[in-house]
Structures are given as structure tokens and as C-alpha cells.
Length: 136
Image (tube, rainbow, N blue to C red; front, side, top):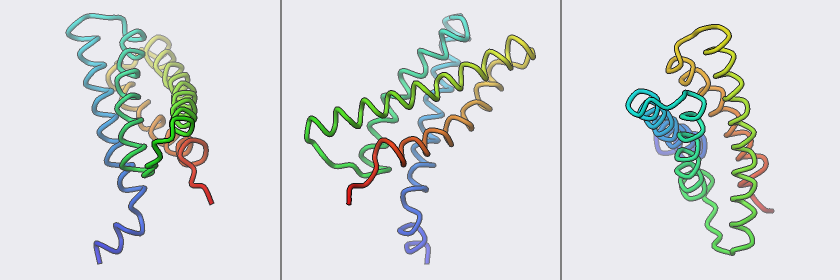
């Protein structure tokens, strides 16, 4: 029963697992940059984004969307699309961070977590539709 449910929803389950891990990487590195190294929250957000996106590309390619191609042209296209759409979601996240932290005075770490929920949903749609689309 559980095996058949996993097979049916494997992509979504794996995305939630690796998306959760990517979110953890993003939040932990963000907290390290802001709280330990005392780097401005917007700069910290970009630095944590870079680390999280590199982690996400590898895990999404291999474990979520199971894109096994090693063809340099296809991998380059996947990576270019992946980073392009991650930059789009970074823009969304930066706007959320700025509005919530600077304009509404909401705690930056709480805002980061809220923004991550929106980013995860956006990134799944972008990856499914535009980056790791299945060829027929």
C-alpha cells in the first residue's frame, strides 16, 4: 500500500524531502551569515541562496526529476534554465524579505521561513514545467 502510494507520488514526495533539505540549507546558512558573521540580511540572503541553489540543482536533477542525461548540451540547458528560474524566485524572496523586514518590521528569520514556503512552491512549478520536463 505505502509502496504503491510512493510510486504514484514519488516525484512530489522526493521534491518535498529535497526541497525541505534545501530550505534547511538556506535557513541555516542564512542564520550563520546574519547572526554569526553579522552580515546584512539581504546580502546574507543572496549568499545562502547561492549555496542552496547549488545543492538543489544536484538533488533535483538526480533524485526528484531523475534527469540522468550526461550530454553536455542538455545538462547546460537544464542548469541555465534552473538558475534562471531560481533567480526569478530569488527576486520574489528578496521582495518579500524587504517588505516584511524593512517595511513591516517582522523578524528576519521568521520572514525567511515564510518566504521559503512561497519559494518552494514556485520552484517546483518552474522545475516541473520549464527545467526538467520529460521528453516524449
